[in-house]
Length: 347
Image (cartoon, rainbow, N blue to C red; front, side, top):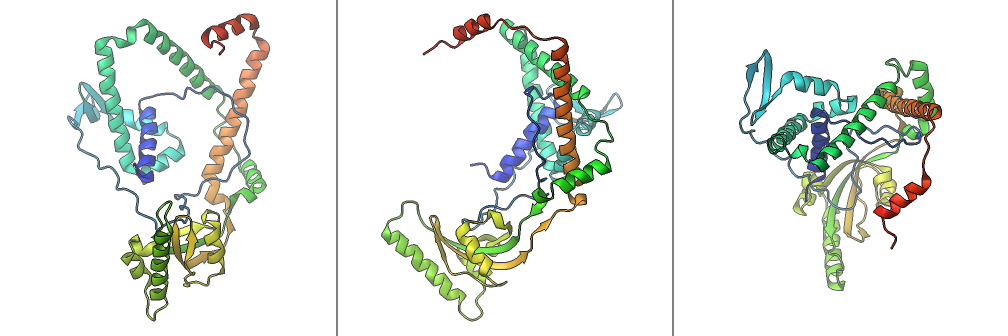
């Protein structure tokens, strides 16, 4: 199974490859404005504390692209080549410039994702060469679909342009008002730095297996209470990576049964083994961070982007509403009903 880290990287690279290829967003559904949400913290959320955390699968190594070369063509650098198609540096620069701030930040944090996206782009162009060579796009059914896609893309691109807020929006006063109105949503819960030793219990385990797992948990507890016991070393002996360190975990992300025990622990203390449906959890509290409200500088970029997105949605809705007001649509409901019945026969 693809790990969460690799899966997320692949998903982002897939989206980025679409941007590099110039694919516009085709969704035309108008959504209702949403209340401002707390911007995501610039780190991956900690997992639920249910078992000793295993490291994510290693990132997929980038293999050397076949036929890739660096050359000078008409004064521009060729950074990738596949078949008879080149990808130029200027083309990629323009694509990166068209990305939003979050996407550019993701590239800066994970340059391998950009390389993967370019490889996907090259694969798409290989397929495109096959399509054009076979004139597959000229088939009547395919041509009609392409016309509809082009129509939707033109509408979407145009609406994006006419509904774009001014470059200086929101101003400082507007931004401060939104921040003040949403302080509660920007509260970061209390955090705990935890380490854990986990004794797994097989699903649908019988009494013998249950007794065996409890015996193992009791033995670990006994060793931890011995003078000079080292939690990290004992965690490693029981299969936990990094000494069982789970890192910083939000209070709201900890299972209630474990959270109730952790809250009562002093720093450096170890809770008694906790029995859950998946096994026994032996948890150590390393440190604690009090809850706090994120400051405006911390959330500035995310908040600006969210406010701009909501204003763009409102402007788009108003623009389309005015067009419909000036040119009211007339529908033949009877014909529409008959068409629907033809396509979706009643059961």
